[in-house]
Image (cartoon, rainbow, N blue to C red):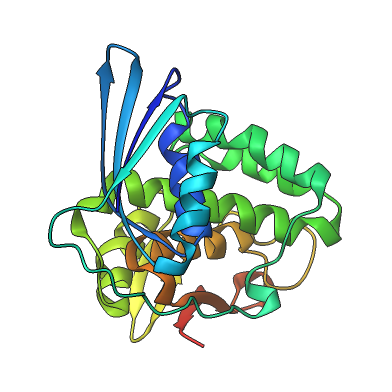
Length: 246
């Protein structure tokens, strides 16, 4: 489907609506933003499950940033339903509490404005959060930034195979902020700034969430999810992320 929305605010518009599409199981294939007589005009081409389309249209039409909305089906677009999204294990998709969600929401425009200079506010957030809230809040923030980066830098690539999405989206995106390499089926990070900050255990929750956001936006509902299998915080030489589809 192609969505055309008009808004009086450009900042955060694509991120907010892109996240809404992803939350309903849709992949953002391409987008275009331009000025119009009534405000900012954002056009998004999305693909996903037909059964979720009505709910997505309702969420976009009633979004507080949207002043007008219309949806059209491009000529020749398939009407067949897409596969249902695969559920992720609880640890791979934690949910932040309400207070942490507000802090995440407040940080999103700051991080997108200063990107790729992310780590000063991120490390401050990690330091201030209670240990039990740190993982879900940083994961959620990383997931949102990953989806924003994919929409900004890689949407023109369209839907990719999982391996291609890791190589052509996840790797170059992560290289904007850390030193990353692909080794076999895993992505290795040698300089995660979240390690060795006073607590043991895998700690690269923001990077894991960012990979999930990048791959979800790049590959749609069947995207692999990222799992941190090794972490320098636990004594490993590198932080390793593997990609699984079940």
